[in-house]
Length: 240
Ligand SMILES: [Zn+2]
Image (tube, rainbow, N blue to C red; front, side):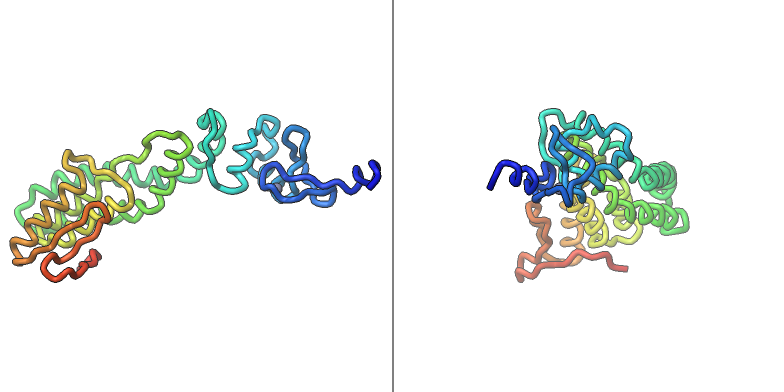
C-alpha cells in the first residue's frame, strides 16, 4: 500500500471506546488531536453542552460514555462536572428525604412516648415508610459519589431503626423490627446509633427467640436469618 492510499484509507482507535474510527464515523470531539468516534462524540458533546469541552480529560470522557468511573490521580477535579450533574439529578429526591427526616425526628419523639398504639405512632411509621421508599434510589447516588470522591459518603439513614423500634414497642413484632434493620444493612446504610443495625438485629433476635421459643440465628457476614435447630433459612420480608 502506497503512502497516499494509506493516508486516505486510514483508520484509528477511538480514544474513548476503543472502536475503529475512519473518516466516515469520525466525531467532532478530539483528544490529543485524535478524533473520537461519532457515537462517543455525541455523548460527550451532549454532556458538556459545548461549554468547556476543550478542558475534558480522557478519563472523564470515558466515564461519560461508559458510566464507569475509573481511578485517576485527581479524581475530584476530573469528575467535578459529573458530580455536579449527579447532584442535580438527585437533588429533588434528596431534598424530599431531608424534608421527611425533619418530620420523622419531630413525630418520633411524640410517637415513642405514647402509652399505646395510636394515630401518633401510625403517623410516624407512615413517614418512615415514605422515607424508606427513597432509600433504594438514594443509595445509588451516594455510592456513585463515594466512588468519584474516594471517600465515605453514605450517610446514616435513621428511618429504618425508627420504624423497627416502633414495631418492637407497639406491636411486639420482632421479625418486622429485624426486617427493617436488615434492609438498611444490606442496602449499605449505617444507623445513627452506637450499636448500629447489627446490634439492633441481635437485640430483636434475642427477644423473638425468647417469646417464641425459637433458636433463630443471624449470619452477619452474609446477612441471612436461619433456624439453628432445623437449618431452615428464614426469609426476612415485611409482614403485615
Ligand atoms: Zn468511541
